[in-house]
Length: 153
Image 1 (cartoon, one colour):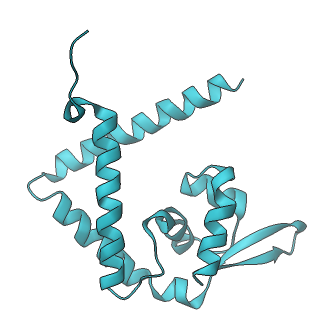
Image 2 (image 1 turned 135 degrees about the vertical axis):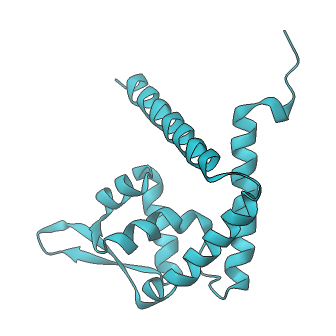
Image 3 (image 1 turned 60 degrees about the vertical axis):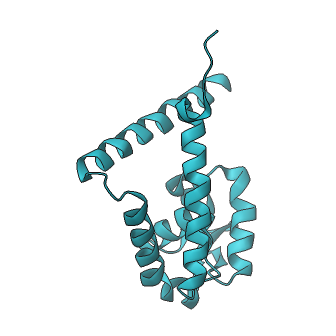
């Protein structure tokens, strides 16, 4: 069996890139004066900035998060005063997730930090290469989601 170095392993590169980007984003959020924002919150924040007051299941689906991780993530975001839960007027058992004033106010800074950090991380990479990388990663995610669903049937 041939030797595979970590830097030749696609999964290793994805996971390392994620870990380093997460670490840098966390530092940059703190430096920008939005320490309550964590990189893990971005999917929820980006989704709610597009459409606020979503049900938690719909929010998780749109943000690409597993239902099992949504509760603890929403708990942490509520603790950090970025979102709040409200009763769903159409279904007493359901809740809507809403941005707080802090969650709304931090949007511009957060997006600037993300854009700046990604620009630094992709310095020397063409926009065409970035677009292609996004396509590959979306395809990768789709394939693994389908695999996961298929193994549970």
